Image (tube, rainbow, N blue to C red; front, side, top):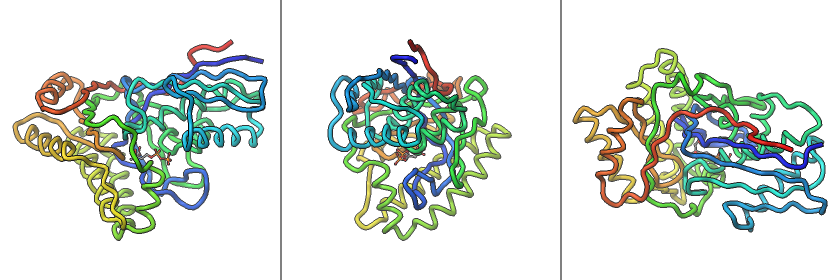
Length: 323
Ligand code: DP6
């Protein structure tokens, strides 16, 4: 029996987004998604067995409170109810990037937590099952288990599949952060708002499926311009869907729009760069590996940006140490 385990997971940024859930409690996506894991966005999670009857959870050095604490405790309850683990744990999770600000911290957070918990299980848990288990914590984290370019289909109890390993992916990302405070409306709640009230929700579901199929094909032939075009359009349709809800959900700031316009200008001047935006105001640029330094340089030339983070494709989640 081990007493502690440390796991590492990388966040992923979707090129075709998961936005919307089907009925049920286990984060069953209403849209199939495809993402790239990013080496610069990392969570390291340590789990230690406790003798007490209660879990203790620390995130980025502070004790988790409120909704975050409830969400993680419930997730541990789910593992206990499934008889995968027993007892209680001290969870210490550290991100090297802003938490809850639309940079997929729940993806790497729950992936690292699931991998660390699996180390305590009596049963050997295969990658496919681990991806499903991570999904129950946060839908997007299913894709951080497999890393690289991964796809999460829709279906009964879906798990992510690796499409292309990190080393073979010829492009990376440059994250431009404009705000680092946690967002007021978490993704799960935002998805419900879109489903309940956006007149474009069904259009989004249809377009997301078409984008998923087109993206799969573009990755197969590694047509970078197509990958970029689909990613950009997919993000814009998703945000259009949420902005059109009642009440509207607008994650962008003025800077988000400035960056989007700058990307279009840079591209018209010959730089092969595309963007995507998750559920937050930060913009993520997509560029070929050989163009990443130039793209970072032009990104740095924009005033009012908080941080520029250059990210290369990263692998799946793994245990770093255990004892
Ligand atoms: C816009 O995975 O954070 O980043 O399943 O409720 O935890 P929950 O949602 P989450 O949603 C991710 C939304 C997104 C798109 C994506 O990563 O595919």
